[in-house]
Image (cartoon, rainbow, N blue to C red; front, side, top):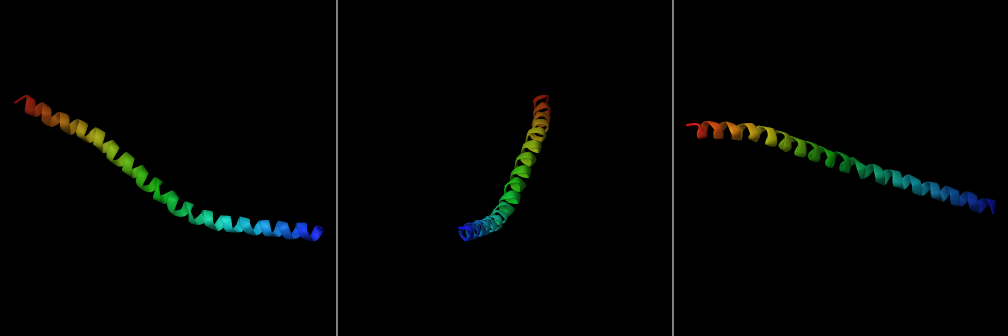
Length: 67
């Protein structure tokens, strides 16, 4: 009885090891692959796209409308 419990416990430990290797391989490309393009892709075009065109659009419109 004691032998069976010990053998079972050892087997379960082995499975945990496999999960660790699989998890390390998944979060590696998913971590830098998602926050890398999503961070600069949303803040980069949204920041200059809202502040840049807002000032450039008003400038040419004001100068064109006055003359």
